[in-house]
Image 1: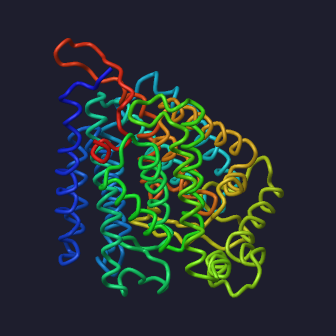
Image 2: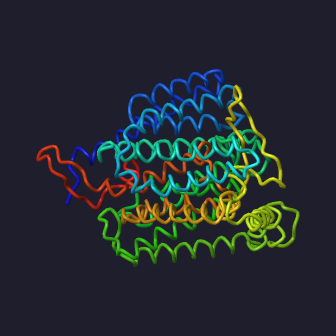
Image 3: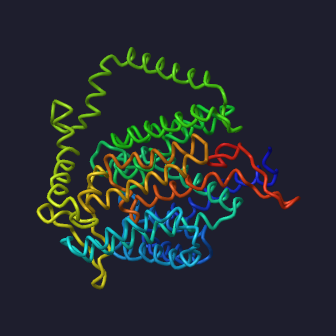
Length: 473
């Protein structure tokens, strides 16, 4: 059954307008840093206008807050103003809670409650742990309730908006290559693009790389714009030199292909031919073979990428230096307190102290760098918290699978997979918020297949609804 014409045409133009508006908001900040505070206040006001505006405001606020210092120098007020956007967004959306929202948020609420209760007794920074637990449930609930409250046509419009934001982020990051001092400002090697850290760019680029490649491989026809986007996303991802991001993109692509082959490509927007998938895989191996022949020492270059200037000569030693030591330490802390954990969102008592930034006595920032999410959750919340978080991820995976669209499931899987090296899902007040935005869209993607017909007032089901409407139409 075909999507009604008004829906078929709508998202494409909306995406162009959205991209123009996003650039109009972000670009002036490069030459007018003082405008950052004005933009953040404006986003807080924008969030008052409805659920879709709340989600847009929160996503843009995070992009502004974690912008590359080589492009925009942030003032001290940017931190509290980001919180203002998050608080206003929750106040606007959370009153829309329904009893049925517990079906999607029950495990989330249970995990946050357990994390908070255990932290009162065990955290070395009780105030920080409680604030992070509240932020965790506040931000994610706001995103999920906001997306759920949208009608299918509004959800399609929001999807187009996020497609536009994704294009602006990827294209803007690629454009910084014209000024290497900005593009590689942090360490001179990994591309950070418009963000403050290469890892931040990588965790955003990974799900977009997976979704765009799946759209190219599985789409009914090859659209040059979409092929170009996939090339840009993967190029940017590789230039970040973030192994976590590359792993996540590959995992997301693989997960999407598994779903597609499992359900036989029944979506009309996707090819139903397994032979086409096989052909793309064959061409991929052929391209890799030609690359190896052309570059010669591909093994050495690949090993150099994995070692990532660690100074080590073996992968095991390099892994221990970058992630392994942290994982081992988190596991030891968990074993010492397996039932209660050591406090949500903070370091354990015998490790590095948490750097807390306060605003009028209220902690507004306390960054911790924990790589592997499973051991981070176990260290902080013990067995009970780890079990609840695993149930949360399983529930979200089931909801994302329900779309039966490889692109959406690949997007979701890549978002989760970034947490093998960066526990960003535990920090929805930072760059992890963008991942939670994608996840919220992915678990609601099945609703895009039901579009109200204006003529008959009935619901029509269509299998061709796009993952990012303005990219695939």
